[in-house]
Image (tube, rainbow, N blue to C red; front, side):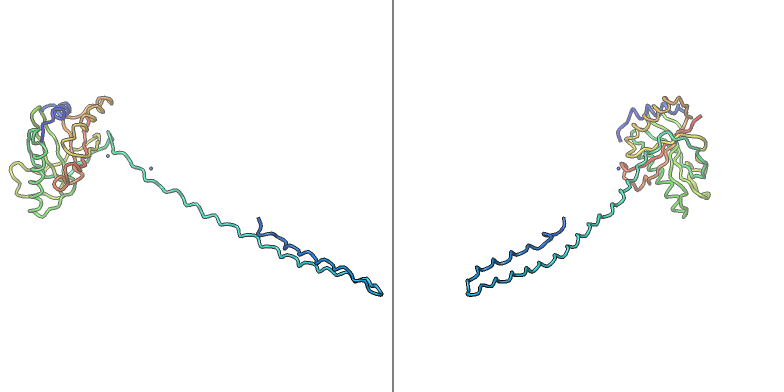
Length: 236
């Protein structure tokens, strides 16, 4: 992992060292009556009776065409609204029982160090048949230009036994804090922390000398570029 100077400087700034018509023609055509043949003269000319015209049958009215049915218009599809991730949401952290492992690392190998700590704690839980009671967390306790110290924590609902010298039982941080969300790799957290620093400056807020990362996606099973991490900044 490349050393990220901007990330280091941001963290150092945060901590001093110590989520669119009708039909065809209506009447039949009437055939013309045949023309009368000229009368042949006879001895006693008797005028021929005039032929009686037979009236044409009345045309049956055509049935009006059926009205075309207009299909019902379906309701418009509802497009789900994509909500934005919280950014600077004020919350209250509740303390949880956690198993803790103290560690320190250089910025060059920061993520690898955190993963190793989570592996150690997970192995201990598996060995003792205890399931975690929350998401794993990292609490940064001090930073400088070369590295940092931290506490890797996993919430549990009972005490663990046979802890190593760097492990202990404890409580996660509590109190009012600001919540931010990071999506992506650990290496790209520089932008997230820079935005956090700008937010604190714009709002004129003062942070405590620590901050917390809560891993919503399991860092031991999730590709690094698919990580989702809540970042909590405790306020004074």
